Length: 138
Image (cartoon, rainbow, N blue to C red):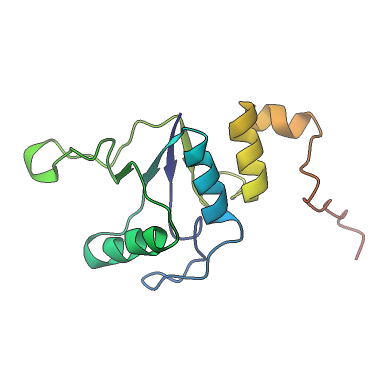
């Protein structure tokens, strides 16, 4: 499966143009997905030095991507009709409708092949995921 992953707000907290703290389990989950045979693409608005900083941040933690802001490493912005529109099976981004699920939930959904609908309507929750309180409970 090809998985496109955003950086700011998804792998690290939003501190753009700086790099925020890692979101818990983001790097570990991505390493596990890569080990499971998935192709990971870093998909971010960062460019130039800011992009280089993000790529290096991940590399320092052992996470290297199949490609960065492109479908293939061989894509050359100067010699193609460059588009940041990627062809991926899954996009992991904090700007998803409903926000970013926990990385445990993300891993479970991808590894089981369930859709979000199937996951949430089945009532399944990761054992480490806290149950949400009702709005009237404090």
